[in-house]
Image (tube, rainbow, N blue to C red):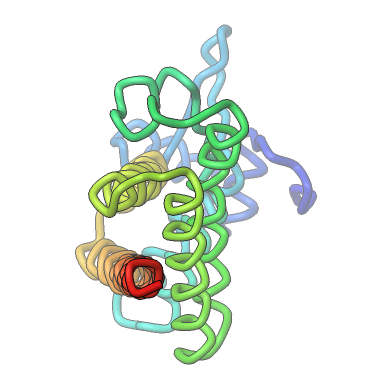
Length: 220
């Protein structure tokens, strides 16, 4: 039986995890039904997290709770990294100093962690998490003299990066069930919409405050 902390499994270990004969695992792999990798020597190797996600997605075809667990597993599988090369063509990024750039490079990871945290709490805590992230994006943009358009583009950049990484995780695990994909997209869109609304609301508060201060200065 494979150990819980072993990342890569061989054919026999994967069969034990799935509870099937090794020949079944070999057959599923050959038909592209099971996520499989090959060593330089041509041996089959399986990632534990991909197999678990594959199992959950199939177990959840008629079970909404299991589908959500599959989504949660997929998010935890994501290894999100943001490189300078990915950001260098973004106009808003060119306006930032090195300290601000370092903070923004963490934004994708913060968004992913917030999304993961939202799944394990109540709807109220999920909304609070989304609002906090929106405030963070707006405050960071305002501090660095970015416009509302720039702030929105920055958020969308990281939102799209998380969505792309999620899709890659599902594809790597050979997840093909429509229900699983639908729940994943609904959850991401609902959460990130809340983040965006909070960003816009916070920016509006900042603008209103600046206008009020400007009017006071003129009156003086």
